[in-house]
Length: 119
Image (cartoon, rainbow, N blue to C red; front, side, top):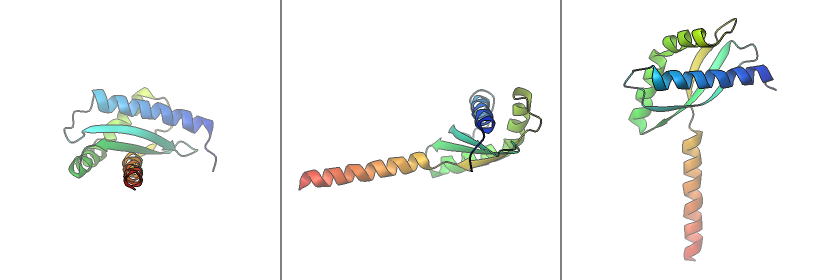
């Protein structure tokens, strides 16, 4: 399925605005070092999948997930003030483990390179 250019542009705008809200306005202590990595919008702009990563351990990830879920209404309301759309999309937060996966692969490659150096 090819994404429309409009959904990509609106997704980028929503990503920037949510990042700004998390950085400057949200005061929930559960939300730690959260980075919004990507926003995937449906073609009709009704559903937004917001991908995020968290710096920290498993406990930090769980706390940040709870904090984001409880702040969903506030974030949607703030987005409504900042982004002019006919319908504000329904937000779903999804943990993005691609950074961790990349680090894992990098570590495996380092191990292989180190093992080859010993032979």
